[in-house]
Length: 357
Image 1 (cartoon, helix red, strand yellow):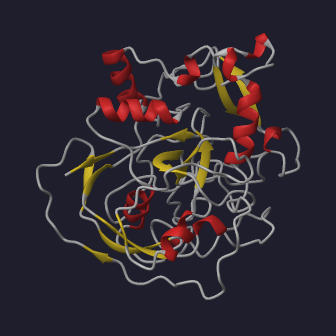
Image 2 (cartoon, one colour):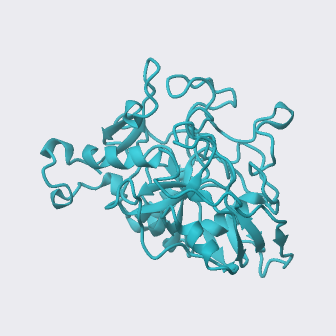
């Protein structure tokens, strides 16, 4: 995606979660206990996957720390909290790695969107010099900046892609166990199809991330650093100009660098954002709640709509990334939501897959 398109998509991908959606009613439903099934795995575990037996749970979030929202502390597109049932499935224990994605590309010859020359018809009026393959790369500014302008720390880098994550001159040497990045939605779908899997629904992703717990703030509990121990690769220091890397990592970390949640899943918060299969609409949870019944295996709305960018085709992303911080984007909170235009790629977005029983 050339710079003109990347700028729009990146701005929307990291802003507030409400997108102009109406506030939920004051008496929004509260979290009820998760009713986790105990069905045994139907077969031996596929390599690198964990069995999630499914069950009934309360989906959504009561809190956020996106300080730029006009109603601080409320993530309005993750409300109201509503009851959901998901059936059992297998899920990747980690985000898909460079090593795994390399095997896919070697077997199929697949070319990611970031590696393709953009079609001028998709970007009328764009200067020819910007119609080149590339992707968005995080560049910390040298001084504090206005947090309302995400373009202050993002650059469209020609030649940046999953093989060259920082652009020309960079490589995957020593990064085989890092999550693959610069992945657009179609790239994640293509890998999943090749592997005989699919992308998780948003409901499946959240059920798995909660690990059988109800209403906890994080995938591991209610304390960000219980006992002073880091449980996720997040941003420490002054955002975006200085990452203190107190958790041991500046930028993405190798997968499984932190303890798993109760279902054995690593990095369900932080590290890289993960694509899920649902189209994004800020009012979807309200639609489910208004139906007045349990949502059974919800797969998201039939179409995408973001009031801030009505023409953008966006899918949901979950989990936050190594850039998340309470100063700006706290989407490592387990019930919160992200979003991005489907052809956008960057160096803090990857994915994991699921497999039906």
